[in-house]
Amino acid sequence: MRYESSHVSRSRTEHMELFNFKAFAFGGELDLNRLAVRLGITRKYRWEEPMKLNPLTFALATGSDTERVYLYYFGGVVFLNCSGDLIARFLDSIPQYAESLKGQIQLPYREEYRLEIDTEREPAITNDCAVMPRYNLAFLDIICFVIAKSVALERIEERIDVVFDEVEGLISNLGKGRLELPDRDMARLASSILSFKFTSIAHIMVLDKPEITWDNPEADRLYLTMASLFELNQRYQEIKHKSETLLDMTDVFSSLSHARRSARLEWIIIILIAIEIVIYLMQLYRGH
Image (cartoon, rainbow, N blue to C red; front, side, top):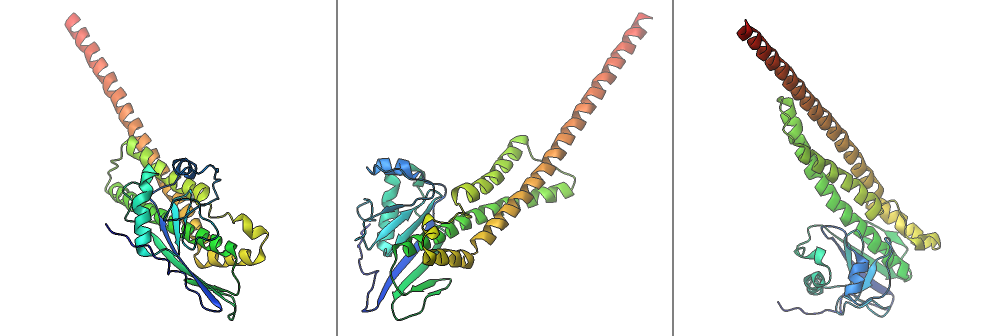
């Protein structure tokens, strides 16, 4: 497959500068420290820190790089000023360094955003574009952070809806008087639900703000406004509510399953006692 690199994504005029963002979500979390070792990078990454790479060289991005890739622990990846060919090239190459990403070239969860630096316009923040009167690296980091969270939440939302459909089928069978769910499947279902809660809280850090926002009022306003526009908190609360609802349903299924096993055990005991009585009576009859 032939790739062509593009350096035209960032356009400038006398008073305007344009930055384009494209975010995707991998199928699961990404161990940045292990990836750093494979790439020959010596620094250590905390959960909230992204790895910023040059998409062509896979080296750490510098201030002079107009094209960058932001990688997050929770499986989000954001391309800054990258053409479609450059994105495809990076996604084809990254599985060589991160085995967990093999087979994930087709990424269904995506988000696009644009930042315009325009000295002649008032600041404005919308669902697909932000306008700022001056450049600040913190703006790029915050936009990447927010849209990476958004696509990661989209991945969880779709998966939890699949589990809801599965539980809906169990409820339908329960209404017909059937409860056909082995303990192993029950445990798998509970594990999936707990995974949703853990991933959204611990990995995606929906409720956490970037450190830069504590010292930079402009960055703080940008983050709070974008988080509200992308409904990060509301979506997290909905995932949390659905997870708790599913756990309640799992408790009900588990209780019914235990009751069914207890009833079967009681019947087995009754039958064994009856058999023992029959044997005793037969022995008495033969003795006479």
